[in-house]
Image (tube, rainbow, N blue to C red; front, side, top):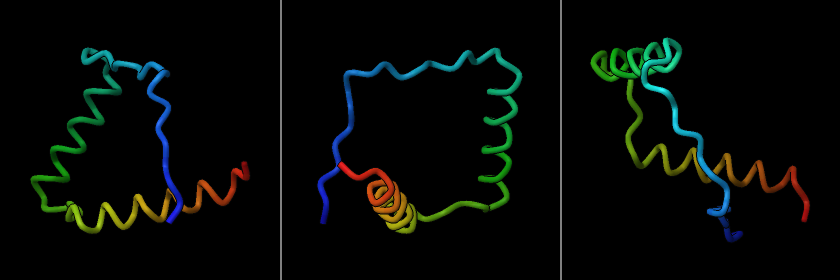
Length: 61
């Protein structure tokens, strides 16, 4: 399995919690959770592995 490295030197943008778009996204996530539209952590891990694999194959080093 390929090793994955995160660039921890880059700053991650902090969202403004008074931004209407951020609040709408949070509300959509809460509503989805309340409705049971969630993905178990085991499935999330599989999806992330697939995404990383696809991303790595598109970016030759």
